[in-house]
Amino acid sequence: MEKLQVPVVSRPKPLQLIDTRVRVVTKDNLEEFLIEFEQQYGDVAFTVLSMKDYENLALNIAELKRFIGQQEEIIVYYEEALTDESNTKDTPTNGTIND
Image (cartoon, rainbow, N blue to C red; front, side):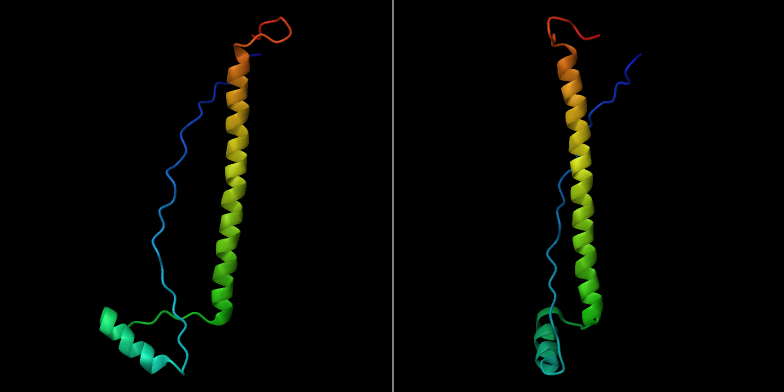
């Protein structure tokens, strides 16, 4: 039986995430926030999340991290399996040579 030759490709470059700032604005600090924000950034535009939506966003990010971690484990498993197979292919075992 002929074995399939599968090349091990290089890993993708690591993530380079950009810092993101989240501010909590309530009716108690809205006026102060608007003054500071306008001085620092100019125009004001709002993107609003409810507390539940913010929680869901955090849970979704955690789920993505879990999924990516599991995918990485699978990739490492197959890389090691392919690397071990190619390394043992030329190495005699118990006095015999692998075909």
